[in-house]
Length: 340
Image 1 (cartoon, rainbow, N blue to C red):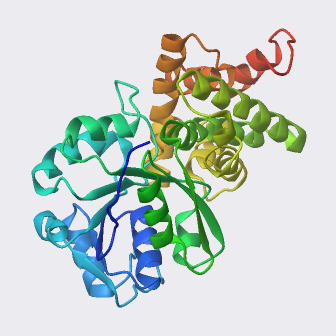
Image 2: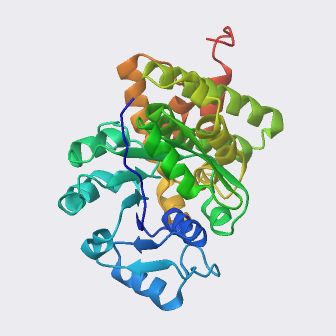
C-alpha cells in the first residue's frame, strides 16, 4: 500500500470531451467543484463553449456554471490540482506522451478510460507508469455507467481504485454527490480488467439477442462471461471479489443488457449481417470491444487461460466467422464442471 498524505483540493481538469468525459465534468461541476474540460478538436471545443452543452454527444444537457471549456492543453493543466483522463484507450499512450511535460509530479492522475493498449495488451495503469514516470498518485474510476445518465444526475455507483488508500478516498469524496455513489478499492488490476473485458462480452450478448436466442441464453452468456473475466483477471493478479462487484459483474450486466451500450449495439448489428466497418460508421463512436477482443485473446495465450466466448467474438470480428457459426461452436463444446 502506497503511503500518501496529500489531498486533492482545488480545481480538476477533465481531459477528453467525448460523452464520458463531458458527463463526468458536468457531474463534478454540479457537485460544486471547479472543473475545466479539455478536448483535442478545436471546432468541437468551440461548439461546447458557444452552446454550453455537448450537442454532439449529450444534447440538451446544459453545462453548470463551474464548468469551464478550454481548448489549450497547457492552460487546461496549469490550474489543475488533479486530472481525470477520459481518453480512448487506443489514443492513451500518444496523448500521455504529449502531455507528460505539462504534468507536475505532485498532480494526482485519475482515469475513467476503459480498454487494453492496442498491440501490447497492457493495462492502462502500466501505460501511465511508462509515460508519466514522475507521477505516483494514480487512481482508476470504473463501474456500470452510461454517460447520459450520469450527466442527467440519475442514480449511479462506481469504484475508485488506487494503491493509495488516501487517494482513493479523496477522489471518491470528490465524486460522491447527490445520486452518485463512489466506493473505494485497492485492486487497480481487477477494476481495469473488468472495465475492459466486459466490452468484448457485450458484443457477444448483442449477437445472441440479435439472433433471437432469448432471455435464457442472455443470462447464461453473462454468467459464463463473468467466469471468463474472473479466470483471466485472477491469473493476472486481480481479486476475485472485485469481479463480483461494480467494476466486474455490475459493468458486465449493464453493457450486456442495455442498448445504450455501443458494444452491445455492435453485436446486434453483426447478427444482422453488417460488417464491423459498416457498424462503426453507423454508430459514429469508438467501439472499444472490437480492439479489446483481439488483445484479450493475446493475453489468453500469454497466460494460458481459456476464453471461449471472447474467442468466438474475436473470430467473428477478425476471421469472418458468421455469428451463427460462432454460437454453434460454443454450444458444441464438451460439458465440464461449472467452476472450471
